[in-house]
Amino acid sequence: MRILVDYRPALRERTGVGEYIHHLVSAHAAAYPSDKLGLFTSSWRDRPAPDLAAGFGPGPVQVVDRRVPVRVLNYAWHRLAWPPVEWLAGAWDVAHSPHPLLLPARAAARVVTIHDLFFLDHRDAVRGEVRRDYADLVARHAQEADAVVTSTEYGRALVADRLGVPAARIHVCPPGAPRWQTLGARPNRPVGGYLLFVGTLEPRKNLSVLLDAFARLLDRHADVPPLVVAGRATPEAAPLLARMAAPPLAGRVEYRGYVPDGDREALFAGAALLAIPSLDEGFGLPALEAMAAGVPVVASTRGALPEVLRGSGLLVEALDVVGLCDAMATLLFDEARALACAEAGLARARTFTWERTARAVHGAYTDACSRRSAAR
Image 1 (cartoon, one colour):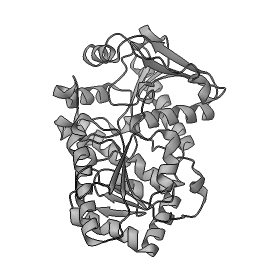
Image 2 (cartoon, one colour; image 1 turned 135 degrees about the horizontal axis):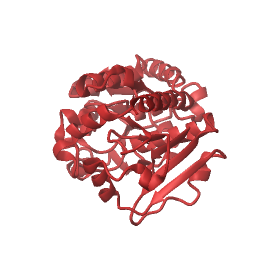
Image 3 (cartoon, rainbow, N blue to C red; image 1 turned 180 degrees about the vertical axis):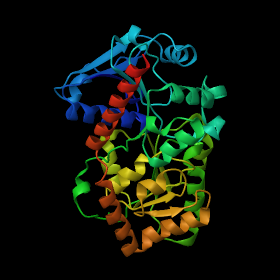
Image 4 (tube, one colour; image 1 turned 45 degrees about the vertical axis):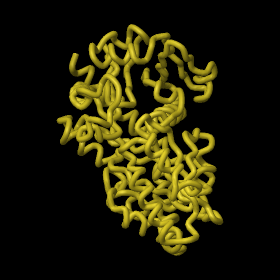
């Protein structure tokens, strides 16, 4: 099978979508060495690393790079469904977009991954030229896709109910846990440690409520470790950054910015707990990373987080400042409870592998090709 994937989200600072497509390509290359994988990239100024394809092993991985401005190409693809991807990248059996908008194709089966649908009820969460009708675009593209991939059963239900996609075309393909050393070990809580938040600094991640809860925790306890905030700042993050630098949080909150993949194991290994109070998550990859590192998790009850944790962490309603404060205090000061959560999280994380993800997504590709052929 010849599969072209839109690799552009993984070229720079990889957030959730970039991590997803990078690890999926790597696992697919290992699991299906006879398949041909194409990594589509485009930019007017930036070029992919010369050794990008070689980093995925000896299999047939090809970089298809075109000197076209990203914004220009996205506008043409999203608004005009033109030019067909074959004009830029040649013939493929599958064209896979790791985000909700299709790669327009004449012959290739079209697959999209939908990570979350937060924007359906929060139109202001989308920036750029697609803000005004992004939800309508996503619905149309999902209905036109030959297969839709989601990370959770929660996501499958949303795509079916909110976008009107038949359940038979939706494939649940959870991502894999990182293969860190701790994944095969017992939890080993660091001495001291820190509270950890990992995520893009955007409204959906609900960092403001975490800062409220952390300030309350500082008032209640004298020996609270610092809070480390790691993630790329968006234009909306200026008030949050200012608040972290002002009393009473100044000196108690450390903002580290974006943390690259190679440094994430050390980041999680030093944490006493991870807090992920998101207003919505299609999956919540930092929660799985923490579980793989043997770090206990406190998460919100929103989105797919309860499905991902499945009883291995503490759950709190996203806007409950007092409840979040209490849950963090429990994991900090109740050693037995924290250890139980960490052990349960490790066991849960071991069930998520990228090989399993690659095989599930390959099933989606096969189904998409069958549907595309039947429609001709």
